[in-house]
Picture 1 (tube, rainbow, N blue to C red):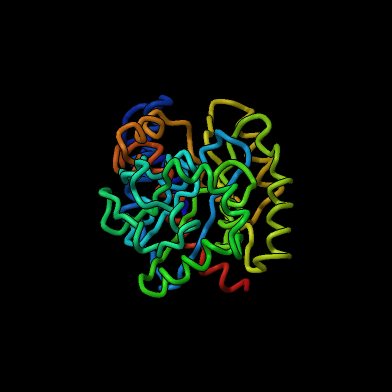
Picture 2 (cartoon, rainbow, N blue to C red; picture 1 turned 45 degrees about the horizontal axis):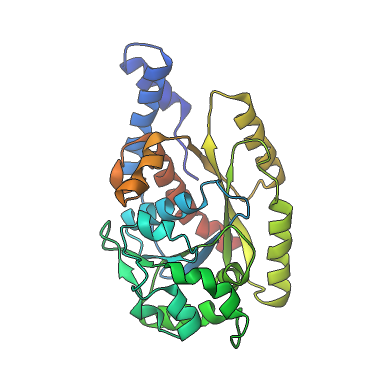
Length: 308
């Protein structure tokens, strides 16, 4: 688990010579940056496949997928992001071309293209790769209905790809709906990663998503499990944000990361520059939080393996 000791924060606050909210925030960020510089993460060589899903829109799903992927790559992991959302926002954030004529996940699912033929390296990091989405993916839900083994097409393509090109992490960004694209993601993954915003109605629709996971476990993929919940859009100035965080932690004590992602202008700005916040402003509060979350996710693997 990734923590900064309170005593370290206090001494750092004193070094700034003032006790104001801004000084405390700056001191806290300074301590956290130093802790991240000393963070050591080892990767076992075993591939972890996480599908990032939440049927409620606007919760930071794609933002969390690409920033966690970029932060893991910065730690030295080989990371593949599969953009299954027809909007293609993950592809945009990773700086990967995804115009209509670019080979994409659509060609893998519908035309049986090898995944290796569509994967592109992100300009952000040599360890970071993306299987892009294009507008054609919007019609894939309908076209998949007629395909043989329609729920397993992504899984089979990914298995072939990983045999030739080992990855430490595969992160699948789903559309905000439960259709055949999301079912393909659930079938291909072993872990579900759910971002939840710290706002009213945060748990709305979550029971439906958990029911969907149970259905996939029973009929298609018994290895699938909810491993990670990340609290996003946290505003420490409001009582509501803390209440929502407490409620989620009460319901899911083992899955919720200690790290929370604050509301951040830098996080919002980064995609318009075709970047994650890790590349756009890696020392900002939002980037620090995503880097801490990545360390926590990578470090949790040992615990999970022991539990199994």
